[in-house]
Image 1 (tube, rainbow, N blue to C red):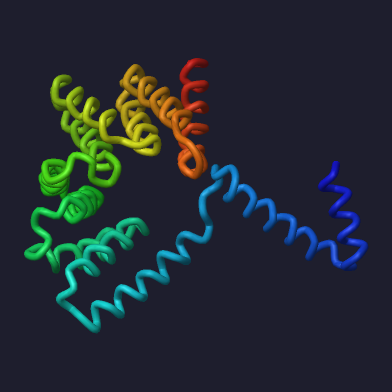
Image 2: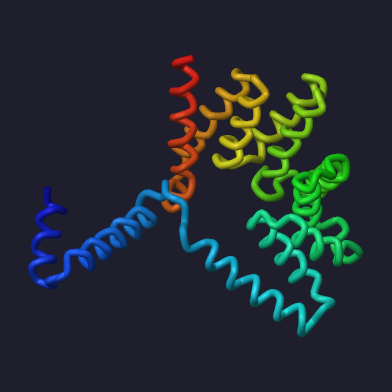
Length: 227
């Protein structure tokens, strides 16, 4: 009701209801991003595209900059452009051997490109180099791969335990979806519950960062309970 009154008053003052509607929608969006954080960040693709241009310029100036190659490979990976990601990651493999993020993004890009065996090897290298790399995201890929391969329960349970030890709420939720797809409802339920509990233990900006995954986990648990 208050929003409607504000809309009427601003429309009367500006003489342009459409402009007022746009302003109110933008205000609502920024308030949601600042205090709630469930909606995706619509400006992230723009920021990533800008960063890609900067990195390409850095590489033109200094083609031997391995860190720029790695970051550019990561940026393309996050855009879903896996072949582009591979072109920059593979070009610096001699200099980045042993770097956990390099092995993770290379392995994940291999996975999405259909090179599953190579992907698994690289992701396992990343975890050996640093079990906490990318807040546990490599374990989501190992869950996918191990379930697809039909690996033993013991091996999958080991990845599950490592994921719980090193993962974040986002990773718990994503892994939960993988177990649910693999019809392992008990593991999925545990991970969704872990997402919620981890979120509730967060404070400050971390709550906003992970709120979306907690909400999605609650929806997933609710859906599972109705089945």
